[in-house]
Length: 302
Image (cartoon, rainbow, N blue to C red):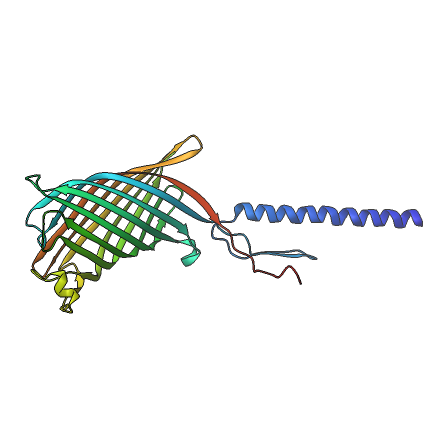
């Protein structure tokens, strides 16, 4: 009788053990076949119910510092009727992060940059100096995405602050820049066997910009004569395009990003014409990280 009970006990334990192995095999099989973004995973047997809600896409962040050098074409009839041509130097930081919005289809983008340009008039006897700080924040919704191709549409809000200085003028040597706009944006990326190509176009639709009236000095503005210096901006008085093309090239254990950045901006306000065109070669080093959900803080002393 004791031997019989012992055999029954051993057989029961063995059946439970193999049943548990079969259960975990089911879990592994379902996870391997699951597509992103996953739904709630529930597995039920006669005796066990397992729920997994933590299985999700990693929220990756691509952080890149870029350096650019190229040509510049500057024009501002408030300072001079001549066009000034020279070179442009820029540095900017770009962050691209996947979010959980719209079922993992929305990518957030943030850009902060600084640009310096220097140019001479046709006679080479006067020089313009350009300084600009630029900040952009927005994102793109992926309307097409597969293993090799992605196409996203969205928008970016930009804030720009700068100044154009002419070393020859006496009364009005500088022209201030301040504008803020909502930009329509489209981004496409294509993955090859070893390289990745990205193309992005941004153009402002509406916003606001600062501009003095023709012949109005900044001294007058400082005394309170500031009527109509802040203006509604749209396609009727402001046109711009930012054309950005990059290629990511793997080199050993690192990735180098090279590309082209074309920035074209022009305005016509209060009979003052301005434009600033640059064409730059850019190079940078993207670093990718994963955002980890931060746990709730707790007091370790209690």
